[in-house]
Length: 387
Image 1 (cartoon, helix red, strand yellow):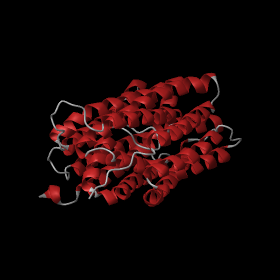
Image 2: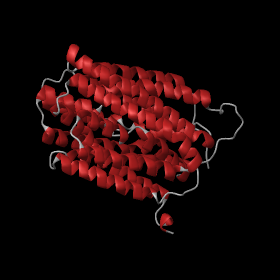
Image 3: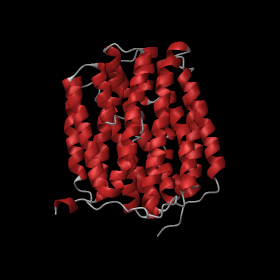
């Protein structure tokens, strides 16, 4: 049968690549586009918040369908919504329509992806990759996402808006097709005991700390960094595309060593140390005197900041029981997205009322606090031993 022609992991890799290619140009284009349509910093911040609220709602809504109907059905429905979003972008130039499209399409506004696709896809990978290979496979999964996002960022100044929106539509349909190669069987069901799962308390603690990190990250999302570089240093779309192309490539390169570092130093240690150092560079962007210094600090940050992504995903998938993986992925991703949705709206007011660079100090300081708390809370919680 056609559905067995490629493996589920390969199908996920294809879908991830075409989706994040679109996010690479949309995350830069949409805030600039909204500014051109008349929105100020507060309006752009609120638009980003609305996008994240939409992502959180879809993350909450997708868990039960994924458990009962299977990953294929849930992911195909989400990809179909992306096609609807692209159609809306092509049909209207109203700011509200652009924001609604970003919400329906779960457009990523940061350098990394959160939301419903990630929630379901990481569980598919966790079940198809053996325990010893899981961090490596998740590193490749994220590497493909960042590399595709880099290419997407690189083309943002080379094509018309309509051409980019058309590409979003076509590639959303490619994503739907890729998901047809996933098995149709539902995910493992949770035992119907009526009692909380054995990892419920652990999942809640993880969700709480991940929320702090995401709230802090909401001050410095890619869309907001692009807006800052545009307003502070006058960088246009073509220059921004080049900046974020290189940033995404550096991010992807860092993922090549994430699995090796995790094997040597442990998942938690790799998460904390790389993330903490990256946030020192993040704070430095606030005082950069020129565009090239700000960009150099951004690149230094990107070399380290996302090494915690595959290690975090692997850690979550290995400290809970197998039947709790949907719950763990959905709850942690949901609360990451909800927390991240709050800060962009605040960022607009901070940029307008305090200083354009203030969000970098706020975000970096809170992220350092998260790193310290994460290590203190989970240093004695070890991943489960698997076959």
